[in-house]
Length: 248
Image: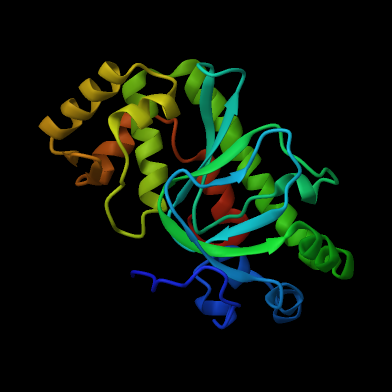
């Protein structure tokens, strides 16, 4: 299913079930109503920054389509992706935990659309409803679980296995479409050299697991890709499914 384009800044006119975001769709009607008046539709082009390291969070984003990367950096050439967010999730988790800023960056790596609300608007809504705050914290827990498995993958798995895991996670959030990004970007996300990523992609293509074109990757054999992940994929996804009743 493809999502219709929503002009940036347009106030939310969709019903709760057609927002395209699983968190918003899963809220009670009363909790969704607390957010609805403050939600605005927004375009999310590639490289748009949603959170900036050690800077106050001004808006929280609920993705409808596209893909966002959560990246930790210790310098210009010391960055690695630790998590990804799609239509199953949201940004601004620091606000849920009584902070006003994050120590990571979050930016769009595959263009899409979404909804945003001001940080103050979200705080006000959470102050009015413990059930809303609790449900958002449940999502925060699942993202932290994803980050834990990313640490495991980065520390114990090789480039091909980490690439397989990442592509499976991206495929979960691609809504049946291609995954749009470059080999260089993938290398940065995985903390691997570009030639190693290119070699792994070429090997997957030879085996019929993937179809790659310039800036685009399509999963052809998901079962084989899961086998190539060698156990690095599935733990966080199972936990999300347990808490929300569906896959990310």
